[in-house]
Amino acid sequence: MIIEEKSAVSSFDVDIHELINSFPTGTIILNYDGQIVHLNRQASSLISFNPQNFVGRNIQQVFPVGGKQILDVVNSNRQAAGMAIPELSNCFLQLNPISNTKRLSLILIFDSRLWMRFFGNYTTVGPLSPILSKFFDASADGISITNKNGYVLLVNKAAADNFGISKNEIQGRHVTYLLQKNICSDILTLDVLRTKKSITKLVTNYKTSSQVLATATPIFGLDGEVEMVVLNVRDVNNVDKLDSNYHHQHSVIIEKFKEEIQALNTQETLQKEMIAESPAMAAVLGTAVRLAHHGVSHVLITGETGTGKSLLAKYFHKKSKIPEKPFVHINCAALPESLLEAELFGYEKGAFTGAVQGGKAGLFEVAADGTLFLDEIGELPLSMQAKLLTILDTSEYRRIGGTKIKKAECTIIAATNQNLDLLAHSRAFRHDLLFRLQAFSLHIPPLRHRPEDIVRISQCTLDVYNEKYHQNKSLDQTSLEALKAYHFPGNIRELVNMIHQAVLLSDKKNIGHFLVSMINLSINKPTAIPIIETELVTEEQGQSFEPFPELDAKLYQSARNDVEKKILLDAMAKNRNTREMANYLGISHSTVCRKLRKYNITPPGDKRTKV
Image (tube, rainbow, N blue to C red; front, side, top):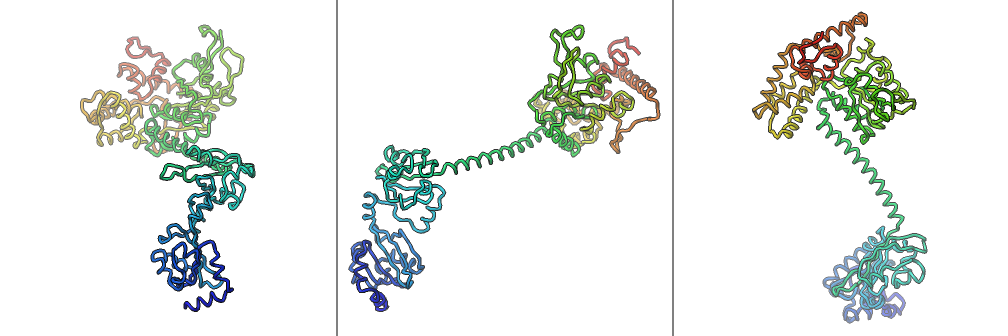
């Protein structure tokens, strides 16, 4: 085998041995079995071997540890650069298969001490292996490594591209070459060598007319001195793109956060303000959110007394596009017609006797571009209904005594516990205004149709009053079931009042027994005929109906008045004041007071009751 390999070498030109011996680097030729075919003088000098004694030997006999690594590379028929073995501590190897036969491999041995002198008496990082070289060049950031004397040891493709030059042009040169060739505006490496501190700066590339963000970082030796400087450069255009992408992603994330926060706020509102455990109430709130989000300018809220119409109006305002704007609430039944008009529209100086000097802004102006809530809209006088219709149609109105047209920019929310269809039939409410208001309406179901909400409202109310009065009262499941079975003519207002009383008046920690007693007492009360304000709704269909449509309107109105008057007198006889009357009848206190004034009945406590 050795003779064959020698004859293979002999077949070359007769000066081949002298040619190999003339290489400035140590050279070893191996066959595919790992046997040494040739060893030149430089190789024998580096490893202190006599060439004659080792030609024909296996490489593993020469290098017991590193020989196996070398043989593995030879058998893989691949190239390896920057290979180090323990037996040659001051050298690194490069292996190359000889491609014409694929049976011989060439090993080049480089003395790192000679390499130091070439790069300014400094130990370089040496040539990289093929895979590390690929990693180095694959980096999107430009990276270059400079020794302590300012010579560029290694530079990757991205760094060369950022400076508009090739790797071969800069690698091995002093960094001042970049200034001499007017390639860039500054050299950070020299500043780092002087200050021994990391530096980041924008550097202008004159060759490409662009800027790069450069960061130079010192690497220290054991003696505390700078051994190398690593320079990282990145094209500012890429940074701008990243910044743009970041802001875009940031805005997308912010929008998602807003949506999530909106959902969380909605959930918090449902838990703390608007209870919506029941599907019916959840649907109402869902519709309210959609209408508010789309900026609907007027909404009608209907529902029995005590169902939370004013609370829903505030909820609508909070979920609208103007939650920071004013929310103005007025009860249309609380003021006589003359004062109501002045409150809503305002008046000019001298408009009437007793007018405030200089005039006064109305609630439409106070609400500005916020929300005006007209509670108990069914009590609005007909003359005021016509003016409200004008505002809904044109958004225009005038102050009392004024001539200047003003704009009503606010959202208008109206609410009532009355059957407006029935009022319109009896000509107590304008049909055209009703049609205008009913364009967008929200109906709050009574509490008796929301048993799921009764439990949640009870627990939340109990928590509120426990905290307010420093109590620790509780509710058991039996009392909760009793509350769910009760019909609650006063709806949420009645439930809240019952728990309020139980927290303060019950002498036991569990207020269930007290609540059950209150429910039984209420059930055993003589049933009062509900005043006409309460919606007439069939339990089965939930649809409004008109009683006795064949009757003349005037006759029907007279009969209605007689019934209301009788109910009021009966309630007066059984209660001490108007608030007790309101609780007894299941209507609001303001309605009781207004009805007493309507029929010229003196409130309870005055013996001169007029009939």
